[in-house]
Image 1 (cartoon, one colour):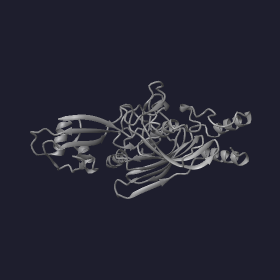
Image 2 (cartoon, rainbow, N blue to C red):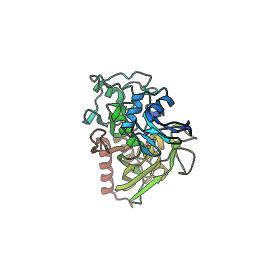
Image 3 (cartoon, rainbow, N blue to C red):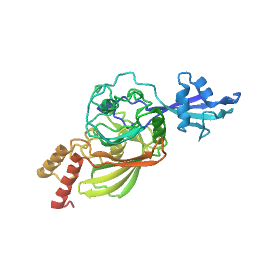
Image 4 (cartoon, rainbow, N blue to C red):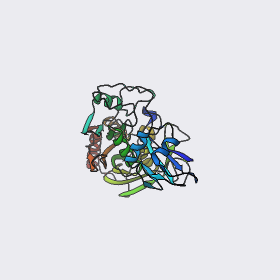
Length: 357
C-alpha cells in the first residue's frame, strides 16, 4: 500500500520574480509493503504500484541509489518482503510549455558529458514562468545544447538541479542526462552538497559566526515574502543557515553563508530574521537606510551604493558535489561580480575615511 506521498525539492526559486511556480524539481514516494506480499523484484513492484512511471525511470533511480528499503539503498533486482518500507526519488514528467532556444550570453565555467556549471549573472531569471517565457537561463541552455539530440530542455529528468533567485549571482549546476540528474538531485536532497554564499548585510554582526535555524514558508501577511517560523512549527519547511563574518564595514558586514538546506529566499529571510537584512534587498526592506547616521551626506552615500549594486548583495560563490560518473568530489569557486565588489570597496573607503563608532 502507498502510505504517503511526499513532494520534496531544493526550492531555491522565486516565482514572484519570474521563475517557475513553486513546483518540485523531483518527487519522493514512500510505500509500506503489505503483510501478504510475496517476494517480488522491487522494480516490478514499483512499476505495478506506480503505473504512470516507466521501468527505465525506476531502474535509473536504483542505479543512482535513490531507492531505499528500510533506509538503505537497493538495486533494482532486490526482492521486497512484507512490511518493507520503500522510498524512491525521481524527477517530474516533462514541462508542458516550450522553451525556445535563445542566444543569451552565459558564463560556463565547466562542462563535460554529464554536466555543466554556469556562473549566472545578476538579473537573469533562471526558469521560464508567468511573465517570463523568454530571456531566461533555460532559454540560454537550450541554445547552448541545441546540437545535442539527447538533451531536451523541457524534460526535468535533465537540466537544472537547483536554482537561485533572479537577482542573486553565482554558480548553478545543470545535468545533461537522466543518470546525472538523479544522482546530483539526490545529493541536494540528502544535503551532502557544499554551497557557500557571500552577502553584504545591514548592521554590525557581533558574533563572528553563528547558525540560524527556523522553518521557512510563505508569509501569511504578504505573499510576496517568505517568513521564518519556529523549528518545531508545522508551518514552513526546515531550514538551516550557518554564517561567518568575513569583514566588518561599519554599518554593514560582509558575511559568508553555508547552506544545509535550500529553501526559497533562505539566506535573505534568515538574515532579516536575526536583524541583518541583505543590503539593497528590496523585497525585504534592505533598500532603505537601516543603519547609520541621519546626516544627508551619509544618506547620499548609501543611495549611491544602491546605484552601484542595484540588487540584493548576494553571490553563490562556491559549489561542491560528487561527480555522478567518476565519484570524484568537485569544488568550484567564482569571483564576486563587479557590481558587488565595487559596493564592498565603496564601504571600505567610507570607513577608512570616517570610522564608525
